[in-house]
Length: 225
Image (cartoon, rainbow, N blue to C red; front, top):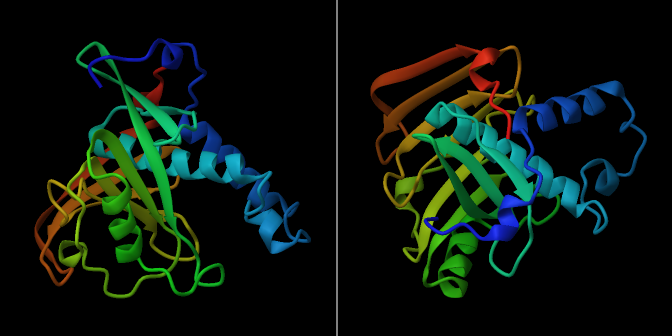
């Protein structure tokens, strides 16, 4: 956004790598093993901010690996967006409102599909060019063909992201779908090494051309908000 609201400047912005590393330590500690699914999966009303915080951290981490600059975020729920993402570009601070959506696990809602979410967005947000939409694909989707989806054109950007398998170590990021629905990035859950791969795919989901690989140390992301 060219004009940044003053209230955004006063908020605390979080580094996604730190948030995700903390959540992974909790997951591996065994503390969640005996909790009900809705609690362990952050799917209660009281735990919704934590679920959205995890989704925001995953999306911003994926974008960070794509653009090579850390993207931090703050939770800021309004009528149209859930978080504000922040990054530096050419010595200028950029802030972008992002709405978070999810294609939930089949055990939560087996009938909803990605297209249903996109169609509703097109109806509710016909003219929101300043808004970024980040949709978490939180289930295994066979034969995902982004270029065949009906994409609402009233938004600023639309991204899909999700885990490649149940280990949730490898992740994919598709988009911006309004520019290129076949542009796919692959990134890893935070570790001591930052890895990202970007490639083009055809309408059948098959890779075409070369893969661009980015590999860097943690020191690349020592920027502080």
